Amino acid sequence: MNIKPIRTEEDYEAALAEIEPFFDLPTESLPGTPEGDHFELLATLIEAYERQHYPIDPPSPIEAIKFRMDQQGLSVADMKPYIGPPNRVYEILSGKRSLSLSMIRRLRDGLGISAAVLIG
Image (cartoon, rainbow, N blue to C red; front, side, top):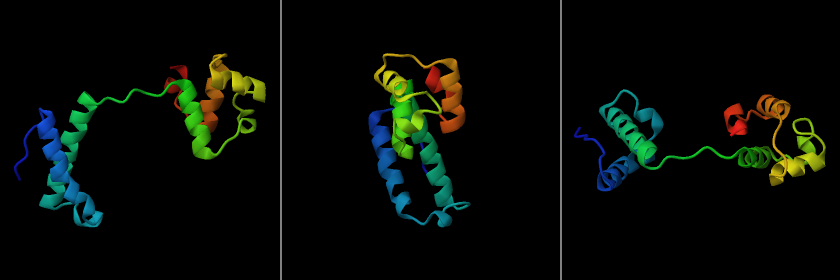
């Protein structure tokens, strides 16, 4: 096993090429094997490099709400318990109105959207 730190884009590309064949193996064949250890180390190095060089910003509150609505197949009418009547939902989704603290709590509790994301 010859693993080295990922410092450059070339190192990153090489690590991705090296880890790719592992995805074709049955997952039950990896744990506790030298190949499994190699895979875990590469995945950890790749994740650290990506976190540093390709950070993903959290979504805006509106994007998070729209995403959850899309994920769960919710309509504007379905949002009434969390935000209020349809006209208020439209105001929130268009950015014309801000979320209130009670809306944030209901969205967090009812739809599982992180309060940190909703506060933005």
